[in-house]
Image (cartoon, rainbow, N blue to C red; front, side, top):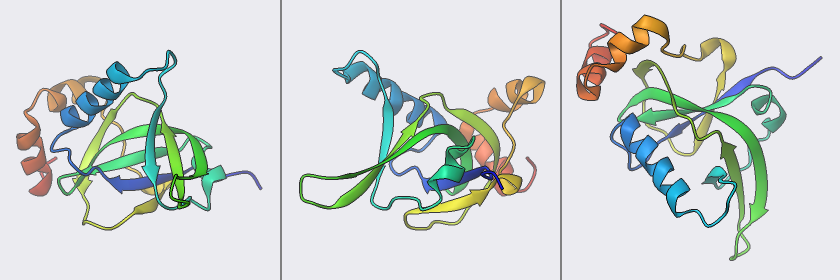
Amino acid sequence: MGAVTLHLIKLCVGCETISDLEAWIAEKRRVSKVSAFEHVHTTRMVPKRHADLLDGGSLYWVIKGQLACRQRLLGVRPFTDGEGVGRCHLVLHPEVTPIRARPCRPFQGWRYLEAGDAPSDLGGPEADEIGSMPEPLRRELVALGLL
């Protein structure tokens, strides 16, 4: 039996909006000293089901209590930091894809998300219409169950 696509969910600490996340990625790229920029997010634990994550999986970001966007997972690289603590780099595609937002309670670390339970990307005319709304308005409409 082949791998089954699996995703991760993680809180996007320090970001208030999708634009904040995009600006943070752009700043990391700007100050990068290497010619081939690689966007990584460091976690403490290594996902045990990493083969399933790399079969088309994404990291879904929770921003201000809502699943808001995703980044495609390109790699999972365990390593040991300078203090001897095991950690993991999640290698992410730098492009952020807005999704059909939905509420998500806070949690620690990350959670798995089955492919069938993942929210769809915003695309086409719907993305233009919803994407043109101010993010606080979109957030409020999702909280009210209207989007």
